[in-house]
Length: 577
Image (cartoon, rainbow, N blue to C red; front, top):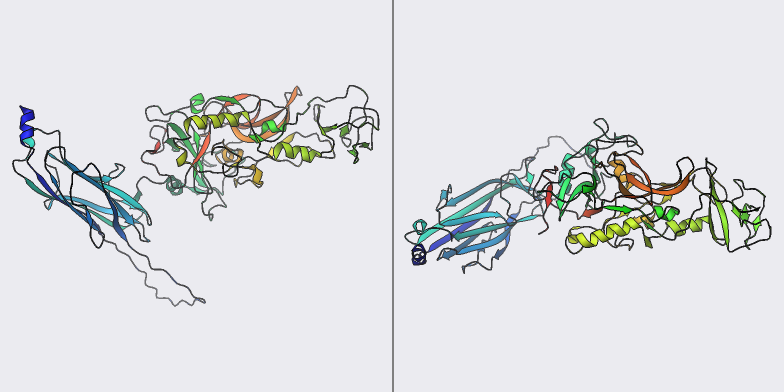
């Protein structure tokens, strides 16, 4: 019976005439100058412009047939009319609100009227909704920055799920009006779906006073900071430091932590596990993609590099089986010069032969006699210099480390083809500079071979160390955090730090090589790569060890959040629809 009653009322019509307007008002104060100013030179000041208007009406294809919404000549009013003849009919369209002027604007007031009366409630058979196209609510003080636009969606409908008793007895002529008043933005303006960069800019303070050789703290920096020296760059560097919790994001299917901005305006973020009921409260192994060795070996400087060239094996307990001559250098034919019968710091070359005329294809080069009297040497083609060999290992990105392959495979399965369009191709600085105290061509040192970081300006001086997709050194725009980035964040070598967002209670790899060093009282020599310890310290880890991995990517400049406060229980949400 009820079904029949609904059918019988299908002839009832709603005539909707809707006026959707954006009204403008703005007050601009002018300073009256009473002083006399003498200026040598000429110039001009361009007048600010105020121009907020409608553009680009798009009607939903499933709407009932109606007259196309019309924007008036001032482009501040949209008018349309529609007949809704039966329950379930609706009419929906979108229109862009554009700020084409040079002044930031904000919503000052919103009003909605039905038949010239402010709407308090709608008839039960009617739906009427004005929202942003992404479903967000319009609200007072929302910012519309200069040069930007917002898309608004308007929908009117004859409800389907209503009883016959709720339907009108006669055709209804209804006139709606919805008015938005924009004014010049003030400090109270709130960016809707704010850009991540805006959040950092708002909270940032200068880092000139921070002591980066000490861990973060209440007297040494917790919060968001502007990197000193970048403030006048096109894209200054902002970064999170210390004991903070409001840098959490859900992007794609995963939780991430904001680390810093890039010099192209992007947002570098580090993997932090899988959301749990919309929260990012992971710690330990749950903040990682799993375990991996840095490399399969730890006996070559190349093993300490995320990307590398040729592997030359280092002998950490070198000795000749019998008597041998040692030379200070080689002549053009490869013959030892200035030979002595026992090794010393100024005679690094040997063929492990006591024949002064003996020449082989490869020569041993003693690199280091350390404090435990380990003799460290490497053999290579006698026509090459030590600098040649170091360059072949360190000045190439031809080969991927084990952890590099592991990160790429994860990216292929979880990001590629799904969310990669939201990422920028930023540079990852794999600094392979080494200390002047490290191994040299013409002498033997006692010091371990040590790599040095790029520095806290986060720029690699050597182009070969700048890993990116665009220069062919990366297949995908993903890598790991660097030594300098975690230094800015508040970590210090070999110093526990339990009050830092980088501490997760498990160890995980960094991007940088560390050193070739003597382990445990002379029991062996190994290469090491950077690592964050379970206690929040920063240190070097043997490259053949197995540690956790946290990939790092960079969101494109201008990326916005749709909701959230950044806290673990209420992370920022990056919409990827």
